[in-house]
Length: 213
Image 1 (spheres, rainbow, N blue to C red):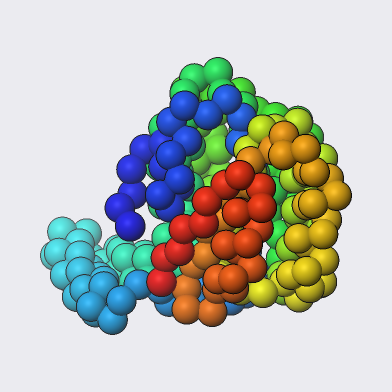
Image 2 (cartoon, one colour):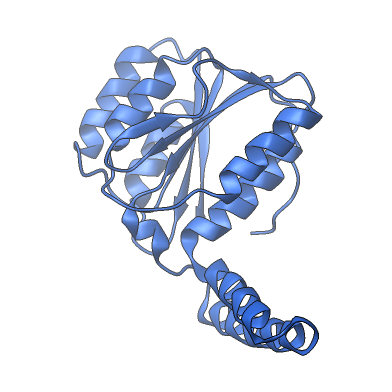
């Protein structure tokens, strides 16, 4: 799935007026994703980049570059790349926010953020520093998103919720979004994603489900 400005794992947000990204930062996001060929290609590219950098800047710099490129196999690193591209392709004036969950839930800002050159740069820098770890408190994150003034939610996860059941989350969204005022789309990352749950959540709320291995 290509990385393009304004898209988030295939979801076209280039004309959105408001969106809340709900992001899984649990420990399992440190796992690898992509085909075996992609992973091998990343390792080869990492060694090549590290060797080239070492020739110009020394071994220390070369090792750092190699480590950074190798990290691109991790699910969390791919999410960062897609998210930064998506943010930078949002139309100026659109509103957005990030809700991140693992053991607990963090919201980037208390209110919606207006997309412009300055906020896109600042939030992209914040996204690049995100780290994974902990469990999957998806219920609380989805609940927080439903209480945010937005017309669109995009939920990304690589597994099942650990704080509740998928049925409880479907019921939560149904109770809060019975009139269908908020479009809920989903993204599954990796081989352990809950395909049926994510597809159902999107289908019941006017959205779509995309998956990335």
